[in-house]
Amino acid sequence: GILKPGKVLIEPTSGNTGIALAFVGAARGYPVTLLMPETMSLERRKVLKLLGAKIILTDGALGMGASIERAEQMVAAEPNRWVLLQQFQNPANPEVHFKTTGPEIWRDTKGKVTHFVSAMGTTGTIMGVSKYLKEQNSAITIVGAQPEEGSQIPGIRKWPEAYLPKIFDRTRVDQVENVSQAAAEQMARRMAVEEGIFAGISAAGACEVALRISGTTENAVIVFIVCDRGDRYLSTGVFPA
Image (cartoon, rainbow, N blue to C red; front, side):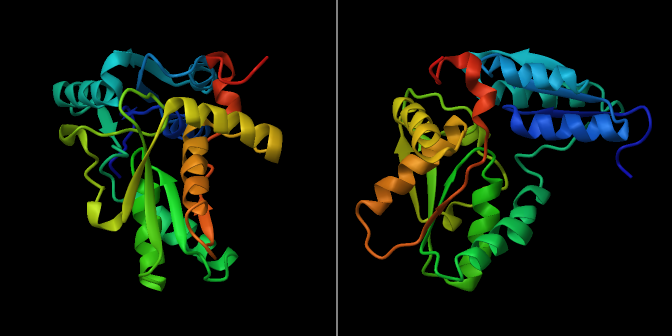
């Protein structure tokens, strides 16, 4: 009942949540305005526009923080116009992974999963899955992947304290591994050529960390999430022509 006729959905996004909101908005007739860093790929912008969403670009050098801040300012200025879903603090974000992704991993590994590796963007995936898996077996190691200093990997972030997602609980992550932009991009190309998995850079970063763990652990069942598609990065030069 929060979204009423005449109101507009607004959300800061690096792309994927925005695309999901845009196609739901198109299907249901909800107007959607999305704020994203100007550094996001051309493909994402084209898909969003194709689905009828309005895009407002923010300073890429300031990352997602600038998009979040701008959205909050717009809502504060016209509270009766906007409905901010706020994926970074909405409990529905981790809850859906607690209800679906976690049980799927537990079922498909027949309860043998020993490590779960996830890129940390909004942190909804790692929070929800961690909660579920830890309830099944507290010994499962939860690993978060984040960009190393100076690296920019779409979909995962090293959050400044001021912008840390409110849904994030540090106690649910056992270890955090840094991954470089170069390593993530190289892994994205390897995944495509060696496995036929055309994944995005954040997914490749998680794969890089999963393989790193596999090199130092025996008898492990390591699960990582392919959370993005490679065709959204063709214009970035990551994939060879």
